[in-house]
Length: 147
Image (cartoon, rainbow, N blue to C red; front, side, top):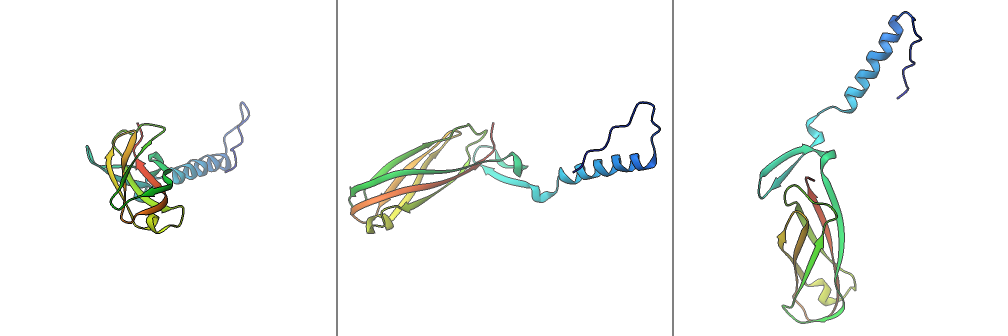
């Protein structure tokens, strides 16, 4: 968007100048429109559904190694914990997906169970369904409203 030239002192204001001002204000209004598609809903456990502008959400994509070249047994659980760099106003929505880093049979047969989500941390366990050597990580998607 181009800048509107500033008038000289004592310069009469003409129609063209007023048109430029109105056009610039309308352009800004279009850019900051409060259309419904620019809002997101985060359903919090403590405060219910919260509607905020999408630009006001805090989204973190995280990764955590859980087991690297580790021998595991059937039904073994390995705990994990991931701290956020900044606090959220309410406990955020967290999705955890296992990653079979070592392409092993034990790494394919896993479940991720989230046990706790706070405003600054998520914790849980990875439970193995097959024994053997495993290298497993977790991808985390954390979405919430920042403080």
